[in-house]
Image (cartoon, rainbow, N blue to C red; front, top):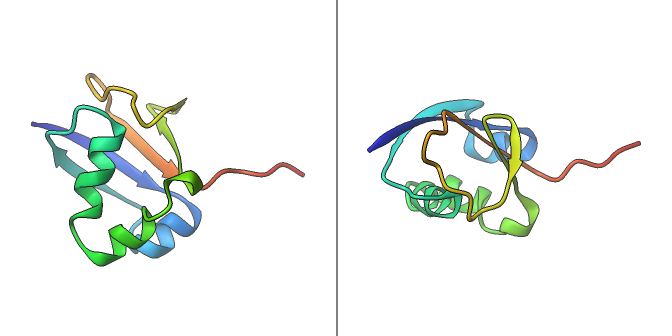
Length: 84
């Protein structure tokens, strides 16, 4: 089991109600971690109900949902950003 610093931004943070948390997980990749989080409580399920509206960064590098978590310390979850 690994421990990750999971950081939430924008409306993901608002729905979950936390800016960040330490998460113990057996997840092999980002998708597995999101599945575990979604099963915790309805607020997590609501935040992750539409994965097309979520982006992920692993140790501050953009990643895909199938990216492995081995060696990762921080997982950031946030909506897509728009420039202006």
